[in-house]
Length: 194
Image (tube, rainbow, N blue to C red; front, side):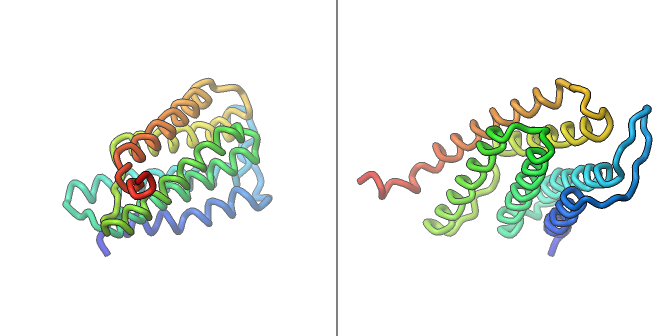
């Protein structure tokens, strides 16, 4: 297993750790930052999400730069991204930090693209790698999640417009990249329109 694949597996392992830290009401106290009491669990969960997001950037960069792209990586990397992002968005909805309708659209798109990937593998045996719009989508999703968590942790519910703006930018790229994937791979559905 090469380094990019190890980073992907590490990201997958971080997801349940992140979920447990953010979902179970541990009482590990608070730290004070700029006059605001920050729950330690929120701070740790945010750091875990940031570390997991950085591994996404690193594994792809290393894989492409060192020609270590594998079918496992093409399959597991986007799957790890989807699991991480969907887990974080569900937590943000529960915290009241992200609108449920935005997250519902994102989750539906991710499920649809996962189904499309399976159809492509079944039809011609190739694993569909992430296209450029999909990479922008993932980057904007992760950045918006990080800003929403940082807003919650450090600014104690003070409205930070950039977090909300980036959430809607990520929604745009989520929809756009989903449409792009289906348009680029419409031949998979050709038998249904005969």
